[in-house]
Image (cartoon, rainbow, N blue to C red; front, side, top):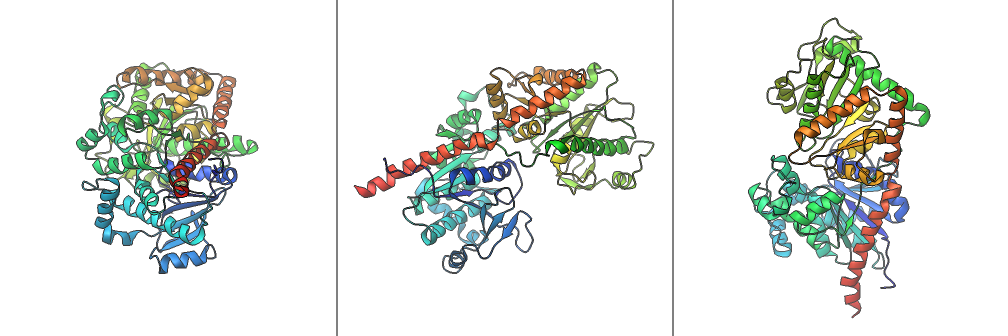
Length: 559
């Protein structure tokens, strides 16, 4: 094995979220690309779905001069329509976008073959399973075609599939081209997320759960099957945190070979010279909008706390966030301080409120609150929305005289929401506290990003990031460390809610100097999670996969 090449010459990183910004995996891939490209020394190629036919994808720059001969060959000979270009992110890696729609015409043949070869049960598939599988299979064909046309047999190649949506392709690549080393990363097990999303206690009965049984009970057989088979059959199986590694062992019956911890790049942070101005502008914008909605004149000393992320009411701790604010209100221990709690969670948004929009555009403060001052945008399902109904049932009215108010911002903050018209990051920097008390969180990018913007952050020890922070400070991290890690179990709801309320009260009582020190410490913790510190785990996974491929394929050929 002395001749084994431990670093890849080519890396194909495959995900539904390549040039497709919809979730946390996009953040993983887009922030790591520059460091991975520079550190690995490999030709790095991302493969994603071509979902923008006839429209301009602002994240993708097509370059028809790139791999022209192969692209024509793939389309005309292999029947694979692809576009090749660059991803508009730091490092500008090469991207192949594949049109997978033609696969639908023979999807049953694909599923039959997957059953025969890999024992994958697609019989009970529904929802997004078909779409993901057709893309995943197309991505495998892309890499198979690219390999045969462009790559020498002396080159070492890694195919890295992210999440269950690309698991099928990883298995077909291993079947089509066994000399390619396959890596599969589950960023969250499909069955673990489903257990929590269905209100079941994951942790209290953790050791008694059987993944196959729960997949049957929760109608998750297809996703669980492809994920489990990939975990067992690829050359290297990874996940993103120790807590999810334990979950994989229990529910997938396979302990990951490597834990590839998530990092981030700091290139999107304001320069030190602009940080203060950015923070002031964010606070001005937030308070300007909310004062116009509430009919108030709250000043810059308002304490702004917020939660953000995906709309998973229980998993992301939105329920606990609202409960902690209710307790803060009912305890009446914050004196005359004004506290604004924002819920920045995209929902089934219909349109920005025209009445609020008019006040914002005309810079009209108004002398009275607008009707329904709980939300900045109208929803399609106002009567059924869980956040709105929970706030109303708890008696939140956001009357001008209320010192504690909760506002639902149910849109993507992409700079074009019609009310704030600023990005999530441009508003995040203005917060005093970011609160993410997740019940199910394999890693947790939102608290990491908040800390990176020097926003003191509250997370939980059921989040991978929270456990990592505890390992950094070598104890249970407190607010004074920059990141507070709240203890959560299946049965300590009251204690967790009270703890979060206490942290907000503590912040209200801090001096300006104390707050500045905590902000600095939050940024210091985030700096320890840069990709330059964590990319080594990816290289370890690739080396592991390459060695296994060498042992199983190349040495056998020599015998």
